[in-house]
Length: 386
Image (cartoon, rainbow, N blue to C red):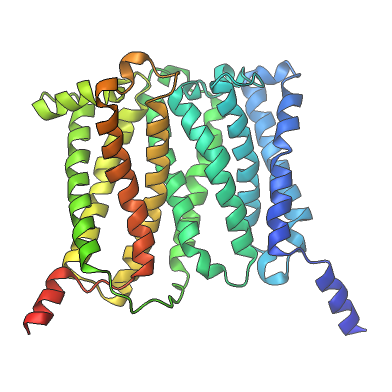
């Protein structure tokens, strides 16, 4: 009898794949919900709008946990991050609809861009909402599958990639909204971003505390030619980041002034998102570049290599989000013509941004996982000499 009950209980369990599928289905309920809200006039009042948003988000959180994740095997069902990611997947579809509104493709709850988060009604807002509604949405489904899977530790790079992407997104969005041309118009709805500031940090901390997965290719050494290439790429990236930082700050240094005028006038955009982004990139990416260059030059221990892989995954996520939002914005019709990349320097600008700033951290993450041992160029040279 006990065995029969166990079999019946097991049959009622939701598999990791179906947990992700049901999450996707629930997330798209955001579309009819938004159409319904569009019919309610009172919801456009600031306090009522924030209250309705809290009620909807709370409902999605608890419904997802009750009807999807509570039916998981006992080892997984107690993980509250599953419900949080289900809620974030739902709001990612909300952001996707907002992106279409900003781009004037649809006109559903377009009033939210006036009554809610007015600072989103620009090219940058379009780009980050588009990223959230596509890349982040897909990552939520993968992470829900991973958290339900017995081999969840093997998905560590995915967890870290998402954490980096959304943390760096918030680091540019919220300060930019606070100092830009809509800083006087921040409403209660802006505080709905608080979970997106806290949950990723908690989740990042938890992930870093978990055991590092065993890598079958652990003995593969990072190739010398690739190490030389990445040292050059990240050294150039440091220079570009320094120039952009000075250009954003209005420096009269000729190189910075030329960059601002002929390559990236969007750093002067009134929304100030790109000004903040250039500062974030310089202050937070400089330590990353120096860490990687140091690891490639001097080598690391096995535990040190694990730290390099973890940090590389976080920064790869941040890089993808930051560069996507920037590159989409510089060509978007919502950006005033005077702030777009000049036609004469478009090829050079995109070569630098895509070839160095974007591809560098992403390719390094991939190749570092394929060759996760860093003997160091100088260490290898000393070994040969000895």
